[in-house]
Image (cartoon, rainbow, N blue to C red; front, side):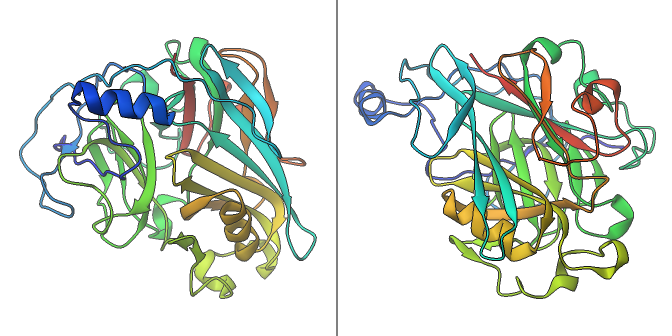
Length: 329
């Protein structure tokens, strides 16, 4: 498959470009923190959101400034992984109005980075050459840094959206679809392709799309009560295993998962945890799975109570796409 030039999306809270000394001082005193990460992939560069793809290119992303700000524990959240600059991953449980419980894991901006992986069966790669850190199992280079991993979205045959991994388009990206975007420095963002992402100048390496957005502007989708709009369920039931991904105003990525939930349960839980935008990921018991470690490369534990798959599933390899969360310190 051809490699495409990376596009980047940007959010006001997550973009540190060339900074003056005064600007950098202001960010440090405000508590912002984005460490340097080396870029090694090709993808999409876009001077304007929704612009057409340009010719293939490979360009390293400039390292972001490093600060010493630490991330403290927040009331209501339980720390999962802590690094030299504070809490990198924490979690909380939200009980929905109908009694369903949603687990929300928060991956802190600047302290974590992301890799999108294909599965051994889905999406089809068409013979495309992909690096080990995009394959069906956690790679040897990722293992020492692994903090968590979680499921992707619907199967390619569902028509739920596009798939770009390491600059290679496996399924065409569709404007208007909810998307998880991974930039050249490993930063993740959630938004709507062609609207709020990619931003001008953003350097994107991977995009995982899935349906229309679940949350926009910190409000549930107008279609939130239409169960059919959020995918076919086993036996046609409404309350099934579901997962979703959001982003809060600080740029943190939030994974929500439950073995028994309605779409509105996921949306409400993510909004309660600060998400301003969100997308549904995969649904039904076989596919909803989260694994987390207390330290980089440490033993993994299942993250969603009652999930079907074991904690080491992404280490041994999986049939479907998933996202690895790596320590960034």
